[in-house]
Amino acid sequence: MNKVENNRAWFLVLPVLLLVAFSAVIPLMTVVNYSIQDILDPHTRFFVGDEWFREMLRDSQLQSALGRQLIFSFSVLAIQIPLGIAIALCMPTRGIWVAISLVLVALPLLVPWNVVGTIWQLFARGDIGLLGVTLNSIGIEYNYTRGSTAAWFTVLAMDVWHWTSLVVLLCYSGLRAIPDAYYQAARIDGASRIAVFRYIQLPRLAGVLTIAVLLRFMDSFMIYAEPFVLTGGGPGSSTTFLSQHLATMAIAQFDVSRAAAFSLIYFLIILAISWVFYTIITRATKD
Amino acid sequence: MDWMVWTLPSALFFTTIALILVGMTVWEVVQPSTFRRGLLPLKTTRGDRLFIALLSSAWFHLGWLGLTDQPVWYMTIFCVIWLAAVLRWG
Image 1: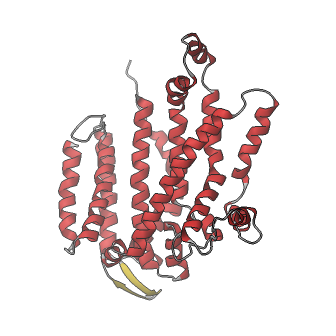
Image 2 (image 1 turned 180 degrees about the vertical axis):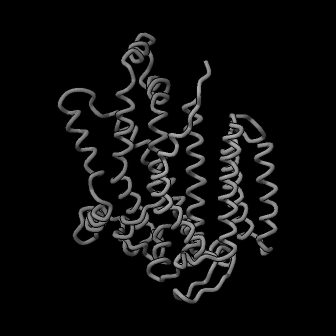
């Protein structure tokens, strides 16, 4: 019997195609058009070709914003992933405390970004905030509005406070999915706690950890509202990340052509990183 | 369409991309592609190779613009050859 292949169901995708064209493709094409012209007002524009791209790629402010962004994103991963695993391992597995600890852990995730910024702005103040007052009273000079190192660590601590919970929840669900038989086998073999973690729990967490790494990398790479509220990108430009640099250029200075060239570069960075992650994930699940 | 501030080069660019996509779709319908392992260190279909070639071409252009003062179309010519090579041998 011949099996008839019919691909006509693909036509049902057309409405989505139109929606994506309207919300993403056509705006993106417009951004490309912006990026190769000098637009003075809606009626006066000049074709400049690759000039903005050359300028943006050699712009030292952009390069340092990109550097800060990469260091920030990798610091976020280096802290949140091990910390998230550790907390998930410590969480109770049965009884009333499961619900209580899950709610407690999930709480920071429910707080909106700009509110997190405001909380930390007050919490870290040297005169009225608990963190700021404590640090200053034990002799550490701490002022996030003046010291760039202090500002940097405050933004990092804020992101850890806000988002480690996501890693914890993902790892906790991954740990709960491990069948009890694995642990029984380990007990029979007399495996140590470290061996159980290394050979049972960690391999079984690989799937959720990839998702956690991907999500945390993406989110931290486009971080905007929290540092914007907390430090406004300062002092100087020590906590100005890519998105804020872009927003200043596009909205505050209304320099749409340069901002368009910059956002296309930003887009290509994200596209390349997402492709690498996607390829790793699909290959890992296939093997 | 005036609000989209079209220019001839960008119109040509998007027309080319659209024609490539239509052409690849027709090719896929006429002769469906299968996973194969070429010079690239992973198994790819024809569409994967097109995506890899286009994305790497974009990065080659950025590198060219950032590191040299030569006209951009030198790189464009190289990338056309690169695209064909990745599709054929990648």
